[in-house]
Every structure is written in C-alpha cells, then in structure tokens.
Length: 186
Image 1 (cartoon, one colour):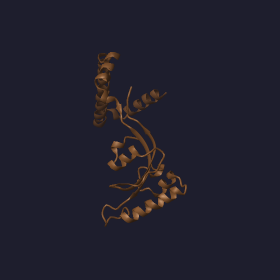
Image 2: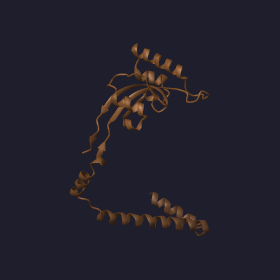
Image 3: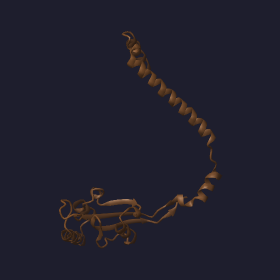
Image 4: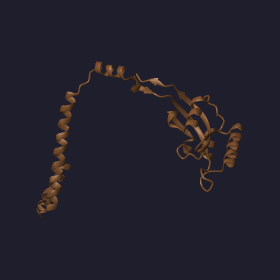
C-alpha cells in the first residue's frame, strides 16, 4: 500500500515538471550516490566477513597471551554524603571548613539516632551525581575516584559508615554497600 501511494505521488509530481528541476536532479543524484555507497559497503562487509573467520583455538591463544586485557578490577558499591567546602573564601558554593564539619557532625548524630543513610543523602548531599538516588555509586572502580575517597571505599568494612573523609570536594560520609574482588574474566 505504501509503495502504491509513493508511485501515485511520483506520477502526480512529474506532471508539473518537478522531476526536471535542478534541485530535484541534485537531490536525486545524491540519493543514488548514497544508495550505491551503501550497497558497496554491504557487499564489501560480506566479503570481509567471509575472510575474517576466527577459530576457537585462535581466540583461546589470544586470551592466553593477553590475560591483562581480560581482568575486571575490584568493584565497589558505596553510598556517600558530600558536604562541600568552599575552595575559595569568596566563592558562593560550599560551606566554610568549620560549617562543613558541623554539618557532618549533625548528620552523624542523625545516623546514630536511626535515620536512614539514603534519606540523609537525599537531604544533605551536595553531590549532584548521586544525591537523588540516595548517594549510591554502584559497581564502580575505586581507582577512578579521588584517592582519599577510593581508599575509604577499599578499606572500610561493608555495611558501616566510616569516619568523615576529607577530599578536595569537601567532607564525605561513606557507607560501603558491597565489594566485588578483582577477577579474571573467563
């Protein structure tokens, strides 16, 4: 049905001579070139695919020769609450060092009182990347974090909220949810 409609429209367009305009001819030539290029690439891809057959033995040999390419690093899931510290006393964002420490102490008291870490992260955290999901960074490689934060994520016991961690961003309260050891990918 769609093809018949297209054919009917094409016949109607030819009557007033639209198919003979310079703009139409340019567009038609472009469309032909695009179609030819796609057909050529498809054919070349098929030919190349036939030539590039890699056997199981070759795959295993490559795997055995390059084990470092098939390592998954340690992955850690953490929740954290960031209280930003002003980098510059004139800056508007962040708190003074003293105010940041006071806010961290207040959050620690709320945690001791039984408040849920996730809820406190949504309320207090200054980290826009994790605030809305309760401070969660799931299955992340700690080597990608600032060193102090990564070290806390690696060493802190699972399920516990550790002491505040000072980084260039401010103070973090970190709770390790899960740790998956580094492993060789089979």
